[in-house]
Amino acid sequence: MRNNGRFDFLRFPRNARGFLYYHHDPELPPTAGEIRFRLTTDSDVAGFKSGGDLVGPYGVPWAINLAVLTRPCYEAVRKRLLEDGLIEPGLMRNILEGWGRKYTNGHGICLHYLEQPFPAQLSPELYLRIFTPHAIGTVRRRLRSPYPGGVLLRFERSTLPEHAGTRTVVLRVLKIFEPLKAVIPGHDMRIPEPKEGDLLQTRSYGGLIRPFSINLDKPAKTVKDIGLLYPQVCGVYVLEAPAV
Image 1: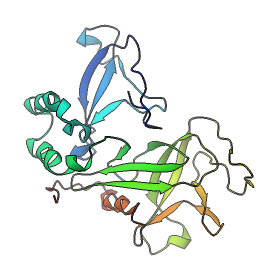
Image 2: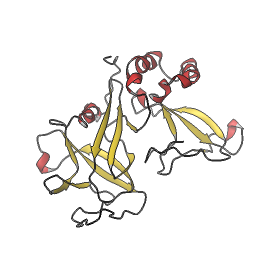
Image 3: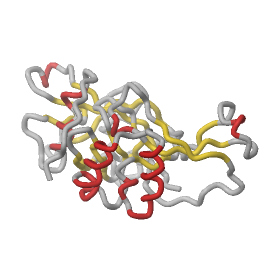
């Protein structure tokens, strides 16, 4: 079992019983499908509806996404999903032939749309996978926060005056999972402690305190793939063969 917040491997819960099943929110793109584990009290499938999904430490459902399913060890699972009509043959073919080769280790939170909430550790680095019907990418960015801890974040288009006329995204803190405490020696407390509902603050290399932001018109190489999500905010998804 993988903890989606820190990406450490955790032992699968003892005596856990239930059913593996395919989950896909119809409001999300087809690439957002995943295998989940529904906990039940016994092996009777009648108890499926009354059961609950297995979740990680930060409340995110345990899941195997379609990109990870490209691994050879999941060939039988892919075959079953296709036979049952749960995924389109063209979608899986695109993933296997193009995107799968770029997604070999399965680490990192998978984002399918810009404003998708995701769990993260505030220190030291934000690492995400971008997985859409038309492209796949990665995002790496130092958060430069003196307050390590687990939080639920969300990207959103900036409405701040200083970002007017640009395609800039910011990070909003939706939930704090554990008490945050500054741990950097000599920290002057100038960076405000993250608060639920507020934008995440950070310090620039020049020492200025300001909201964490990414300007998609002039992005650094390590974060430019966030732009793959930007046109999908309105919920328009187009399935295209990826460039290989």
